[in-house]
Amino acid sequence: QKEVEQNSGPLSVPEGAIASLNCTYSDRVSQSFFWYRQYSGKSPELIMSIYSNGDKEDGRFTAQLNKASQYVSLLIRDSQPSDSATYLCAVTNDMRFGAGTRLTVKP
Amino acid sequence: EAGVAQSPRYKIIEKRQSVAFWCNPISGHATLYWYQQILGQGPKLLIQFQNNGVVDDSQLPKDRFSAERLKGVDSTLKIQPAKLEDSAVYLCASSLDLVYEQYFGPGTRLTVT
Image 1 (cartoon, rainbow over the protein chains, first blue to last red):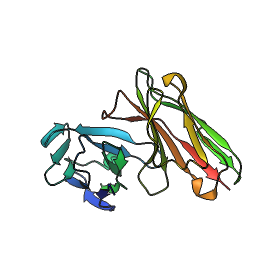
Image 2: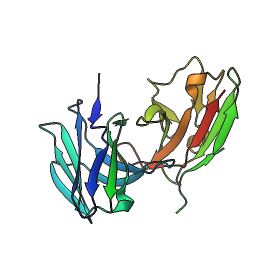
Image 3: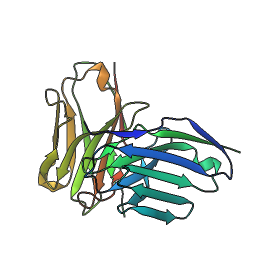
């Protein structure tokens, strides 16, 4: 059975620190990988997409993909209290989501 | 550019009643998804449309859930009859095409009593 696994957390980091979120997946043929942020009571919003092995940077966010290890991660640099949310990892081809990691950034 | 629209935003029904949700995707997006999100869990894909054809409905409880996407644009999701365990947020999302990033609507929070 295809699975997407995330540490449920909660993950707590101080303001200004680096937050590291991890995701593993079981379907080796997956091609596309996405990170979404979901605030409490809101719908998921796209942060990053990554399709190739390596790193992809967008502002304070860096996504890392290692298809050989079936692993994708999200780094948030200079974490802010406004980053406090649940972060969801999603994997195609069948758009399975992990359960999410709850991040709290403490001022 | 307008986002994904959903209605209603909230719905409270009694068990065994029926309910329908509506979704209008981003203009030009060929792929439309319906998800069920139970509190504390990630979204679970119920059905995926490519234009007006079904790509994946393997996790749709077909004895009570149905969905259609007429003319390849708007979509409706129906539950009949509802059960207590159907209480969840129902999310609609759209993407330009398969494997592209999805954009979510605000969701419909369903409470079954």
